[in-house]
Amino acid sequence: MFRNLAAAGSLVVGAALMLAFGAGTASAHHAFAAEFDANKPVKFEKAVVKKMEWVNPHVWIHIEVPQPDGTNEQWAIEAGTPNVLFRRGFTKEALLPGTVIVVEGYRSKDGSRRANGRDLTLSDGRTLFLGSSGTGAPTEKP
Amino acid sequence: MSLHAAMEWLANTEWSIALHESQYAYAVIESIHVWSLCLFVGFAVLLDLRLVGAIFHDVPVSQMARRVLPWTKVGFLVMVVSGIVLFYAIPLRTYHNVFFRIKAVLLILAGLNAFVFHRGIYAKVSHWDLAVPPRPARMAGLWSLVLWAAIIFSGRLIAYNWFDCSKPQPATVTAIAGCTPDMIDPYQ
Image (tube, rainbow over all chains, first blue to last red; front, side, top):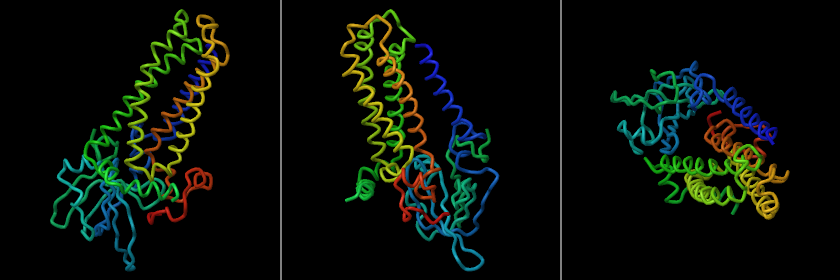
């Protein structure tokens, strides 16, 4: 019986170790390092908001970035929770389609045009920190 | 109507929108889900460990069950209800999530395991109440421990987007998650 228990225990511990090593090294317990790369910062000087998805657990800002050749690149910027943004003075209606913003963040590890948002600046100079707290994102000072 | 279409419809109902846009409700329900899960698994593990023969050898299995099962039932009920609400808050993405589908299969297996145990060897518990539990009982305890650990892992992993249908995925993932090409978003 104890052999059974030991087997179950080692299965669970083994699975936990696999997860710990597979799912993130920089930040052991949070999503930033699992999905985004702190060494790949991105900055968009003239991004045009297409849509803001005001959803749990993360708000997404969909933008179009004009390219030198006249085309537009589509990017999706992840932000904190609706609650966190609301506390910083943001609402569901704060970013209407067509709003021009400057936005910085860190690109997705999978190479797609997704990024974890850090700072957002509106054309009138107002700024907003987009990250949720405790993500382990490099912008957060311990 | 396909299940995909049903989930799309569900996601656009008033309460689903209210939940996924909510300032507090989503986080509160998530917390309730974790709390009730602790209650359920915490008590279930006691009985499982008794069955595999690790703890409380001198307590009759029937007495363990009688004392522990009411709490596991309370935990289970709250856990299931809060889980359904969490699904309802984000139905479409969750429905197409690999980890959610794995979790659903594991939940069915855990349910079958409990059903077989209670209908089978536990019906004759008076024969082995204080003896070393017979092999089917030990196996039921072991399976419960392993399955519930796996269920918790897969549940937590639902949050990660690695295998979401919004990105191009390997054929196995596409098959398990039921992805279709039109679900790939323009961010690749």
